[in-house]
Length: 204
Image (cartoon, rainbow, N blue to C red; front, side, top):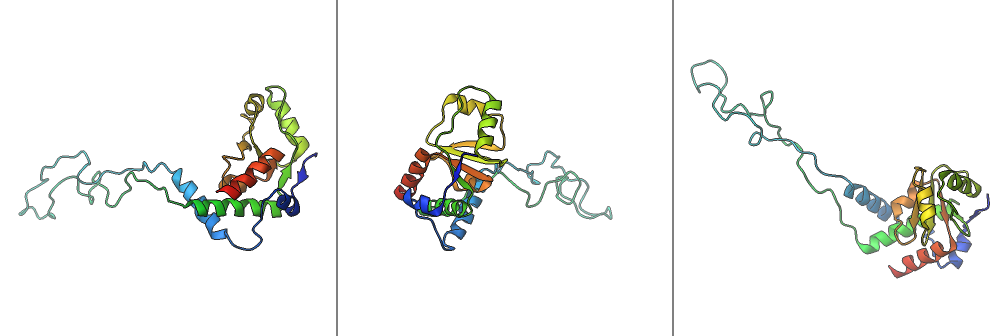
């Protein structure tokens, strides 16, 4: 394996100040929860007694039958009737501030660097559009199954070669988020991506 582990000292040289304390743990949790909540479709829907497609006629007269009073067949107590307090379309997204997202991102990156899960590689590109070539190159860098590859950009050959390798994700330093930093066993990062990460952290 030619990839090298990114140490805390090397990260500091790249102008990435790691979080050494427990600060940012709650922020990371809140941001990841917000990201997952935003992906929920919120399309679950049930019909109430007012919207269910049943007759509004009174099933039987009010008095004299010996049965309980009934005003409509769509009553929730009847089979086929409406649903009480059922789900309706809604937006599950949560708001998170820019400062909170920045802190969460730095916390996620700091924890992965301190754990030795971030590896640096000089260049990551394949010369031909071939999944086999991509997998072979990846195995030279790490033996991990789930890998996140970070660079400032990827050429078309690399993108197309990685499409069928599901446990691997190619992401740019400008678009990667805190949840993605936590979701993979190893993170491969190029020097240019490391510079962009430092700029992103210090700019936001």
